[in-house]
Amino acid sequence: MRITVEADVAAPIGQVWRAYTTPADIVKWNAASDDWHTTKANVDLRDGGAFSSRMEAKDGSMGFDFAGTYTKVVEHKRIEFSFGDRNAEVEFLPGPKGVVVRVVFDSEPTHSVEQQQSGWQAILDNFARYVETKEKS
Image (cartoon, rainbow, N blue to C red; front, top):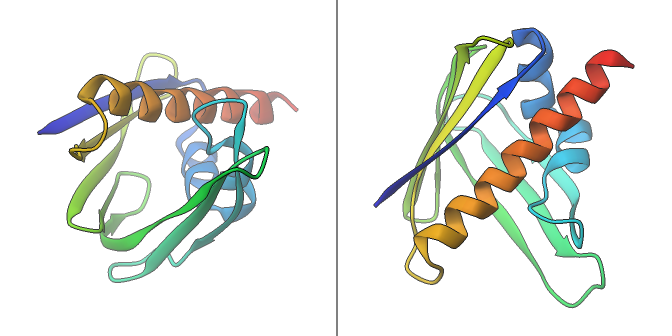
């Protein structure tokens, strides 16, 4: 099953793209809840390039690496990637506030569709807030 999440980001495409693809930015927004964080991120943003984000509970009780390979990168427009046996696409579209970031990904069987959708949406909402706050500073 494919799941879609999206957020409107009130910022120019260059700012949105950089925040989505730069490790120093990723570690600041990539978490679904306040009790988790990303401790490091690596990005080789090109077709065939690898990426990884180390996601950990702030209390140290658990963590995992979200990692994969970029399969298609079109600057300021689209990022496609595989992670394990799953795939995802991120689109950067003109929107009413600036840029609509839409992520479509393959679900996995461990968690409910609702849990997966709400988790990925929370991360994308954090991203939008981060970019909009950074844009104003």
